[in-house]
Length: 355
Ligand SMILES: [Zn+2]
Image 1 (cartoon, rainbow, N blue to C red):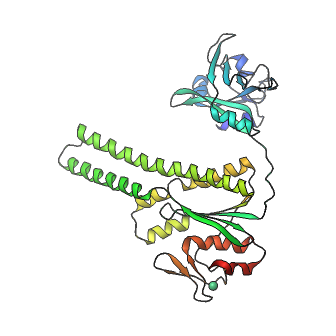
Image 2: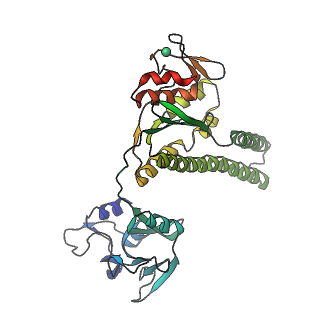
Image 3: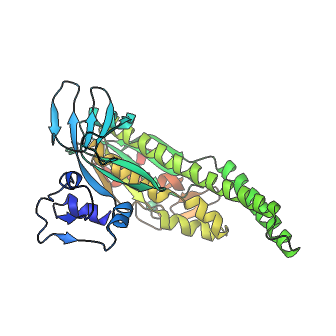
């Protein structure tokens, strides 16, 4: 990946032992080997283990073309196929045709361009990764603000849509924590069973292997649940921001949430599961915001400080926060949203409309 990056940034990266015709078509300039960067003493292995950027030719529905006519990767949007020319076989007209993935068609429709593709091995099989790029100017926010507060999955991700200092809608979103909990306890039961069987001298047995397999399957399932939720929510929130032309405010307070769970006395591996894929969520939210031109800011929004008078808040049962100084009272997950209202609206007294 590092070498591909260098090549992409127009450094010359000399890959010895690759077909000359391919070598000349690598993204970047490879025409002059003298003074080039030379990598690897075992070129074949180097090629196998490194992702190589290849130039592309794009043929659009109206017949227009972009890119190099002799590029090894042809993206044909007339027939919706990808043709690899001479990449997979050392003969002049050797071509492999692949179906065009649906997402590429969608990205092109959104105005993106696929200037290069990366070829390499994934799980020991040849893999072609298309890299879509898009340059967009973020829109001018319409006055709406979408504040997103990232907690642990236990309490979920809270978001609030604000306009002129008023809260239009808000919600907390989380995966099926009951299912996560059930799966977690099933893994614990199985681990205990394995432990018991081992002390009885059955460590290498088929039965132990079977139980271990079941444990692993449940762990991956929990991971998949939070990962899918992360992707789903990032997409949902970016769509919402687009719909209202809102300014997106992201508060990544996962560290604070981790501490809250620790204070609650939850076991460390449960906390780990409840925090899994939250970094991925924030990353995906930022990536999508950039892609669709949604203006966004990462901003610290407090949950323990009063958004009216900045006094320290006290937590009551049921995660209700109260201010002993001014009487402000709100569910804990909503406090950061009130902070966003305070920070991103012109008239502060509107904050009192809360109840
Ligand atoms: Zn207060």
